[in-house]
Image (cartoon, rainbow, N blue to C red; front, side, top):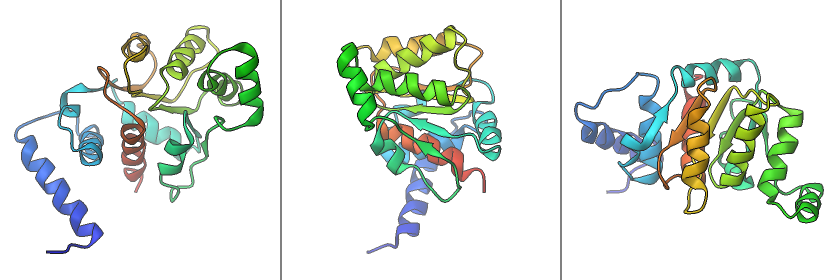
Length: 201
């Protein structure tokens, strides 16, 4: 049987809800968790996604006030829904970022975050790929140079990933959504941001 896209999504969400059983969490968090599971087909995120108190509500309030969204990759920026009018910004491909990263012998992700913080210290930051970006953002927060409306910290991989997430977890005054462990990625970050945006309707 061939289903239309809307029918596929509805049926997928029904199956996810059915699989959740008696799982409970703050109501604002459940659509985010379900959207991530829908995007990844991975129920591990049911337990690995962590939310600071009221993170989703605070993020939506910020978006209603035209707070921009900063991403660590162009792929993530491309995947975020544009229908809500939010500014979605990624500096990763800027030639000046590449040149500075090469001259300083550091990652482009690190330089991109430094540049973004200078321009938008109070933005929503979504990091799904580069742990170096998350580490540098946490350092800038500790230095008092950034105070994000939300940090989505879900980089994926094996090097510095858990350390970066632990740094973010320690910043108890910052609204944050984190995927514990090595799992995460651009798909996860995109699902989180889109689920937050869909809640604006």
